[in-house]
Image 1 (cartoon, one colour):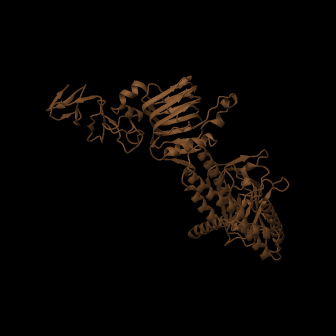
Image 2: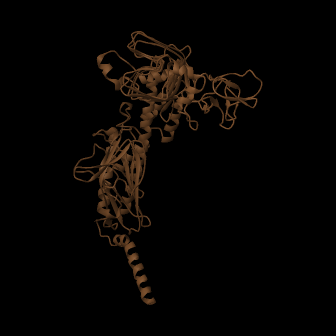
Image 3: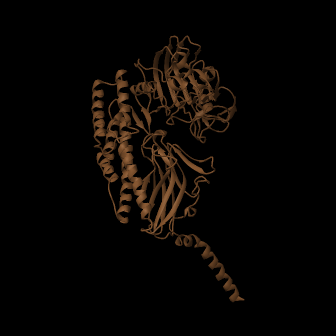
Length: 614
């Protein structure tokens, strides 16, 4: 009986061992030109990216079902890596094939190369959109296993812009046999990669006006491209070495072109910015001359192909540090001075309508007379109907800071912002605002007209003068239209907005706001009673109104409805609280919870001298 049990256990383990070894056995019995795609997990992407290791940044990466029932991966403006590894493969030569192409700026005729794919250390680029045909849709790469391992990697890149497009499908993996058996496949691939080098050479240009589709790159790399495109090889080892060299060359040229495109994009943008700023009196002649000198060296290096990638990185840092120009962090303009705010307005109104910006400190606009509202308006019917082109549509984050003493005159929509469409204005305070609009139809301190815009945690206080004879004039926003949303906003002015189609959530104005501003009640209400992660803060007795900086105090409320700063355990009522009157007696006074007060409540019960009093 014991022997029978032993035999059964032995048999079970033998079956398990056989089952576990099936993929290995299948691999070791491969025949020349056999397709082994089935060894991969989810090779057709029918289950999205299951079985693949995926990392991605930005843009969109999706799997779409095609009319024939197969699946296609599409990437727009997305940098990604898809990776999968096979193990226990026999020696020999393997070939990865997949349909697809790369289109710079999604242009069908583009001949610029971008995204790549790899088999272990061997690399190739996707053919360009201009090279792609239905008769020749396939991209290929050949490699030998390393310790029985074969790693497939698809690397989506965006060298030209956020609209770069990569598409691929129909992935297949083949075993091409021994070196002798795979000689023909390797020779064929070498010819195809040399054809790509020829296209890459023809795509090269030093013309700065065509820097995206036909960019320059380091001259020594382009020399290698020309040489490799016409080289000759004989033996298998030479072919494999050539394939490896060309793959590395394609990768290096791609990196260089990406850097050169970035250099020229920043150079032309900086040149345009400098021209705008000096035309608007926002740059000195000395600053402008210094900028021009740096830009000229950048253009010279681009045209000559003399810059390495490190040279370009250093040049971009030099350009970013130039005096008088806007500073950016992660493509967000940093505003710390009145000049910065004026620059931002000029750039947006010149066409950079989705430019994001943030305040890094309070900005005092005292004495600034040339500021124009952010977001253009025109009184022609054609431009009035074109909200997308002429309005501001980015994100402006005040980060809790204030714009003070803004004064402007306009004949169009007036305010800090003129017209916004699908914008976001967040965490901004405005103190002392004067807006005069002769003939302007919509005026407000914060903005003239907002359409499909969201305003979060903003306020306007101090002296608020909005003087215009237009249809919609208010002390916060002239017109809130087209599903604009206001969240947790207030003004100490008399009115808020002419909300033709807007949503107001937890917003305050007029007497309700003014009478509750100093006591802490307004601050508490704006936070909806939140004291763990509040939006607004107010140091009672010091701040005349709620602010957005956490360096000020959190406002709390007692059960009796009084407002104070400090912890619950030792809460002391602030003398600024409008619900309290001055205490004339020298005896300490407490509320019914035993917390010491410094003023006697005007209403309700309190404790003094050991007695409950009213």
